[in-house]
Length: 427
Ligand code: NAD
Image 1 (cartoon, helix red, strand yellow):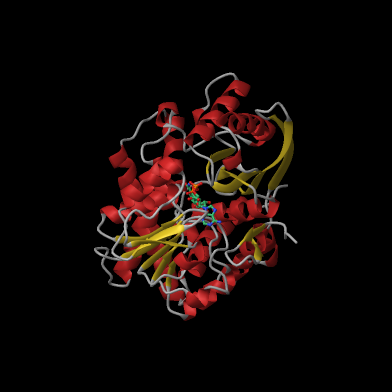
Image 2 (cartoon, helix red, strand yellow; image 1 turned 120 degrees about the vertical axis):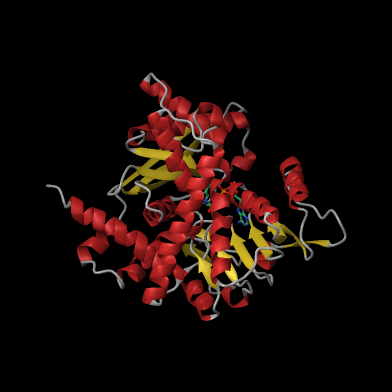
């Protein structure tokens, strides 16, 4: 039986991400002076659109796809959040992801609310033409919710700058003029920002560095394991490597490779880009499963794939000193408790992967003001925002004696609740 909104874990049990996200609101509410009505509002999404739409496939047949766009909360600004193409996308997953976007923007104090979208499909089995047709029709279907002042999509799992270009083009055709500010993560040639592609992975590394400073650990020679090697995992691996860490393992949805003395990251990622899989290229390298990767003895573990990868089942076997959540929702609340008891320092998703929404905000600002910032300017601002976010979350964690996740939720949810209180209820 498939539970709605459930992501498969490595051990085949299923967890409902939306239920997990609502539990996190309860955790933060214990430390915030919120009335029951406010808590109820924060647990609900604001708008949900489900669309079923036809796409003409390359073989001439028509297939109907189901897509979603959900806006969770817009108290602090326009809704912002990625679009995901994946077979397991459903309403509860998109709801959870939209809620996490709201808290994330608030943790790094970016003036956005939270949204998310997705289409239930398997892009690995589709041609580029089919993905373009699906993207353009999906954009048309949800266009009533989109706009630079309303709701601004970005890339997520199995979507990329090209998909953003098609969304921007379709929306612009509907309007009759170019609207670059309707999406972020676009190609630079269409108004994308320098540094946006690297932003989330770079933010993961910045927060890893801050966590290592806290624990008086050095980046030089640190053993790093990364689950997932897409935009977030791939960029993070490259940057860890540049800073002198030893990336000992990396994976994709099929399998991973392990090299105790440190992988040749560039060679591994180049091979993956060319042949769509990893292969052991020397006798020091061995194949491992995604489950084994998570349980490796390492200094920093970066889950950078999908939700619900660290659960109560495998948490007791996790040996990392620090976990930095590149993915959204990779750890269940039950696993959180186990990791905390084991003394593992966890940098939660709504802080660790906030680099993406931060540079998306820079891209949106540049589009609206018709400015172009240099990569140095973008990276400098990104680093400062990520360091400030880490410091603010750490201070709450220390003063309230709570784990970093609870502290980040207190900061993010607290800011959203205060914005909602100040705006009041209409009419
Ligand atoms: P991507 O599509 O570029 O890469 C996803 C990676 O995960 C791929 O390497 C894929 O092989 C792997 N993967 C997929 N299913 C897997 C499974 N069952 N087990 C192990 N690996 C699996 O996506 P991305 O943009 O890098 O996003 C990764 C995660 O980071 C997602 O949770 C996403 O929501 C989150 N995130 C992304 C951004 C961003 O800017 N792209 C920002 C914030 C958070």
